[in-house]
Length: 79
Image (tube, rainbow, N blue to C red; front, top):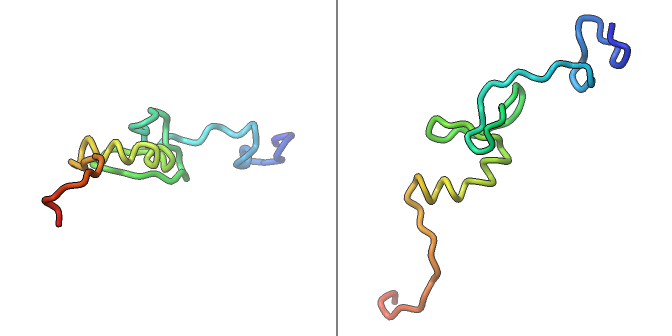
């Protein structure tokens, strides 16, 4: 029995004595494991932590999906 969480057949989740959760995927952005129970995004066969995907979504769109970034300028050709 664990002295901290009183788990009989292993420690309860959140106990400092509990084993690290199992990694299911590896994040393409930070290279850390995405563990069981953690939300993630998958894009083009690659996996990202939810937070990492938000951090790099613009880069993904620019580099891999052909999105463009620019500065609007007045043009006589538009209207």
